[in-house]
Length: 190
Image 1 (cartoon, rainbow, N blue to C red):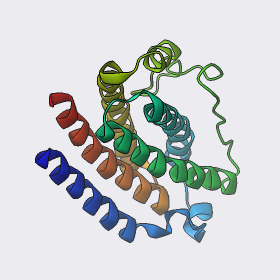
Image 2: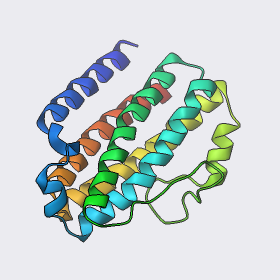
Image 3: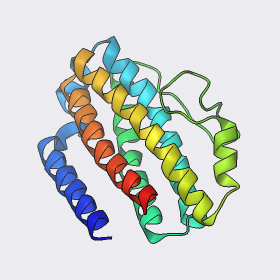
Image 4: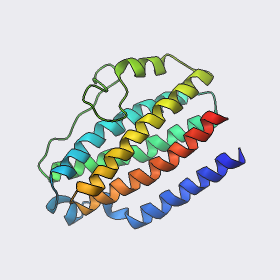
């Protein structure tokens, strides 16, 4: 438990530091609308449904998870990724590009588009039908895979993107989700 608290504290400090450094990512600054390339568009258009699925999975934890640690982590994921979805949607609109629209578990064909870490509808239904310790293990295992996919997408944006705000968000996503992966791996061990 002490190790979990230590890792969580480290993750929070890192998130706060990154937020302070990149706090203008969602304020509609001129760089959001003027300077972008295809990699920036692909990043935003891919990360929105990716984040939507993570939020969908995180919402399940409130009623299905057995431990406060899993419920708290899920709430943190939901709280972080919801605003990031809104930020990326604003960018896409400013860039004159399509904003992907998600849906409920039954309405979105999860995992069919080849995005790394995306769960299939069957995966999500299996997660939703579990509870207690079984849910916790399944949630953590799936969310680790999901986060690893997002980290890869964020690294691609950092390498290929042009928009400073999108690159800053990609760095934040990489740092936040890497820290959360470490927490989830520790939770799986306990």
